[in-house]
Amino acid sequence: MNSHSVISVNSVSNHQDLVIQGDKITSGLQGRIQIPGDKSISHRSLMLGALADGETVIHGLLLGEDPRSTAACFRAMGATISELNSTEVRVQGIGLGNLREPEDVLDTGNSGTTTRLMLGILASHPDRFFTVTGDHSIRSRPMSRVVKPLQQMGAQIWGRKGNSLAPLAIQGQTLNAITYESPIASAQVKSCILLAGLMVDGETTVTEPALSRDHSERMLRAFGAIVKVDPDRISATVVGGATLIGQTVIVPGDISSAAFWLVAGAIVPGSDLTIENVGMNPTRTGVLEALQMMGADIEILNAREVTGEPVADLRVRSSQLRGITLEGSIIPRLIDEVPILAVAAIFASGTTVIKDAEELRVKESDRITVMANQLNAMGAKVTELPDGMEIVGGTALTGAEVDSFTDHRIGMSLAIAALNAAGTTTIHRAEAASISYPTFVETLEGVVG
Ligand code: S3P
Image (cartoon, helix red, strand yellow):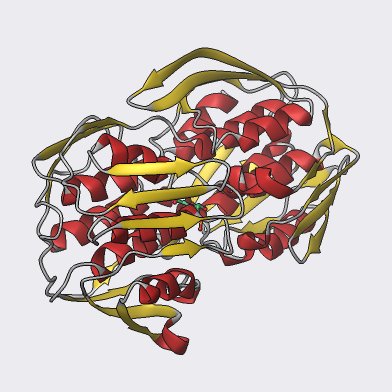
């Protein structure tokens, strides 16, 4: 048990309750915040490091449960990865095509990125057999979106429900290059196919309906692969047969984690927060644009580039927000931030409508249903739409018992909502934050003072 005047954490059997007394927050949130490393970039640095020739040194790796799952899987296939810490992780790569057949099932935990990206890598390793599974959430998330294009490349993959659900079994093959028109804007689908394309003859291309995050394209290039992108066609192409060479990677802070403090600073009156070292890749900055459209007071300071990724410090001060409509091509650029944007919308004047975001239904939880139900339990007026939600702003929240549904971003979003709720909010299963933000509660305690 960890206690604080406003925030406390109680262990309840295998889970944790995060208890927040919104009433006791009498002054604004203040301070400078260091956020953990970017989850997407952390996964990719471990994977490409394992597949490269030579050593990769990673500074600023996210120490969350998801990158731990990636590290464990690649260790089981022969890569040597030093103990994970945020200062320096060393990966001794074993060279493209040299992964060993693991003796046991590869456990991807709660991580969709580990599962989907790794499937492309495994399917293209001939003469080796792999089995992959994960937790309850992973076993219910759609895998056909990567299994189908991999099968078009010649992959052999079996799984539950017509090869669409984990556990999955993969007999590695020599694959063929394809051009795949993805029906969804998904970096996990794109990256899976590009990674499979590393080991085939010729050029493998993925097109998408809107641009998703491009960390794979950037990092593959940095490791020596030939990657071509066509912004008009919204396509990425990898040329097979390259050798990857180990690199030094400096992982920027995760804008998806910064988003909690951007919203907290915007909605808690009298706040002034500076979030340091935030990754500002344009395929990820939709949340910033959305908050600015809502009237948030955010200053971009000290903009710089760190190993191929733009980075800046962000200062947020509280302001009156207004409702907006979010739809179309901005959605993939803020998909992980919709839960916390829904919290911002509650404190805005007018109505916020979020559309074209049906992907939220197949994230770590159904983030549309779960967010609507949990926020409404606190007194919000959120209506579910098939592909998003409608939030009527200006409704006061009251503390309630709510649940993360073991989804990290839900638990943290509810904690920020609780800061502005009258009375006490108890967030059940709040330990889910450790997937992407193990130090979340510590930082929360720091900013409430
Ligand atoms: C990720 C891509 C996104 C995102 C996830 C991480 C990645 O998923 O939601 O948290 O690292 O490629 P989709 O690509 O399925 O939209």
